[in-house]
Length: 412
Ligand code: ZN
Image (cartoon, rainbow, N blue to C red; front, top):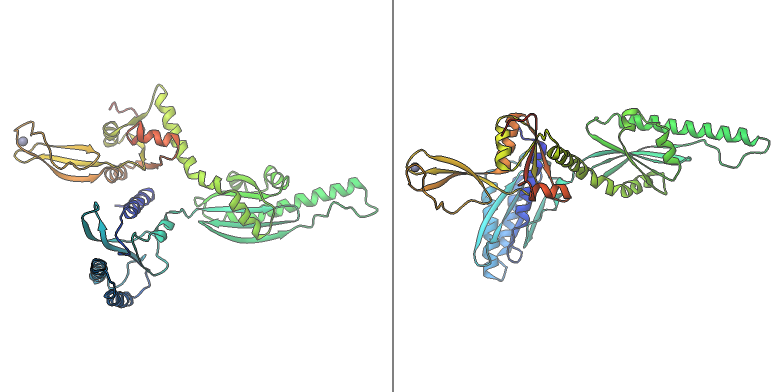
């Protein structure tokens, strides 16, 4: 089953959160990043050498822990004649459980993006930077840095800035030559400026329109005032691109360094973009909630009921939702039910309502996994909402972390 991009990201985030919380003593935790083109035999050779060197570690417990971890990693590598498509990461080490107990644990992550460099790292926590880097969205923005003398057009992809075209103008300076009338000079100057803007608009449109419509998130324009404002007001960009202009930002330079200045200046706007999208969804939910027709549902049971009837158009899940769906079954008769709980109970106190026998937990699934799977089957889209803004925080605290926009009132 194909799972959505948003869900993949969410799962990846959860994995990282889990890894971040794990600690060991000294430098006993191993993080091993293996890119797709790395020879496993080379990795094995290095780990064997590390194992040999670990014999020199003075502390007996550290020595044992490091060597056990290396042995565990070597054992796992036997299952990989070659790295998977995007490479993989092995985390291994003796983890602190509660200060007294420890356990040797090995985890393997196959990321959704390729690992670019090999890394063997030992520390008291796992090394996660390359994976965290993958969480940063690789969005594309069009960049224009402009004044009346020159302009630079470029692209921002993820964190990388590419300069694509540099243009210079023939706009005459403010100083007119002798013999020209002031009025005529002024007119010629305005025409030259207009022509230059047109040239920039055409070049930028040409470059930006080669990017898939869905992938170009927006256009940023930088430069001194009033040039960038004139360029914006004159609508010199293709109308589809004109609609994507996210803002005008002051920059002192308009050469390639102006593109960097522009991205710096627009950083807050870029960061707000994802939050803005989530905010809009939550505001739509709040409006629906207070309206008469109120095509919304919230809380586990109401949302579930609507979801199963196919009445949900968009499911909203708080990124902080951590619940499990447990199946509780009678050990004697066929009584069974499902509950949504904060964590898996150690035992069930109550007895079976039909035969009074013992009840047991027979199945546990993560609520987010379960709900998104139902959504995939029903053709319902899922939006993950962060708790870092007011309405998002309300989704978690006031609405139980899960809410829905409905297609119709199913009477649930
Ligand atoms: Zn029973």
